[in-house]
Amino acid sequence: MEQPLVTGIRVGLGLDLHRRGGDGPLSLGGVRFEGEPGLLGHSDGDVLCHAVADALLGAAGLGDLGEHFPDSDPKHRGLPGLTLLSRVVEMLRDARLRPDRCDLTVLAERPRISPRREEIRGNVAAALDVSLDAVSVKATRPEGLGLTGDGAACIAVATLVPDPGP
Image (cartoon, rainbow, N blue to C red; front, side, top):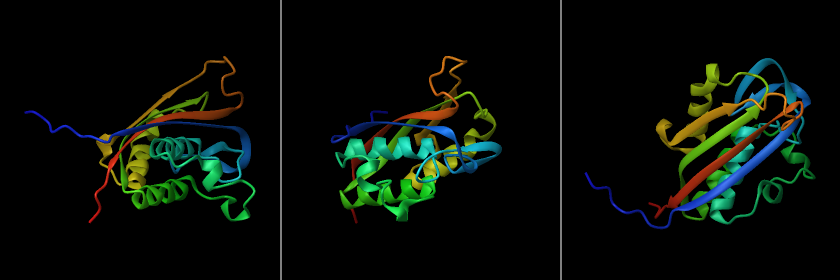
C-alpha cells in the first residue's frame, strides 16, 4: 500500500549531559532509578527529556532549552524533565507543529536501561502525545572511555510535522 507523501517534515538533534551528584535518585525519561545518584543540574538533570526537548526546539527553529528555561531563573529549579518536555510540546502547538517521531540513545556506565525501557518509552510518548511505536529508546555504555565521566548523556533525533490545528 502506497503511503501519502508528507511535506514539511522537520528534523532536530538534541544532546544533553550531566555529571552525578544531584539531589535524589537518577531520573531518565521520568523514571526514577532508586539507589542511583541523581545528576547535577538546575532542573532535575533528566538528560533524556532535555535531549528530546532540545531536538524538538531545534527542529522547530525555536532556539534551545537555555533560552526558554534559563538556569538563572529560580522558577525552573528542580523542574521535572517530563514537565519541561510537555511545555516544549505546548510551544510546538503554538507554532502549529507536532512531534512525529523520536529516536534517542542514552550513554551511561550505569544503570542498565533495558529493564525500564518500556516505562521510559511510555513516558516520552505520553509527553509528546505520540504512539509508543513512534519512540525508540536505546542505551550504550562508554565502557570506561570517559565519554560521560561519572554521569550520563543522551542524544536524541526528533521529527516534527505541520499541525493544521482544529
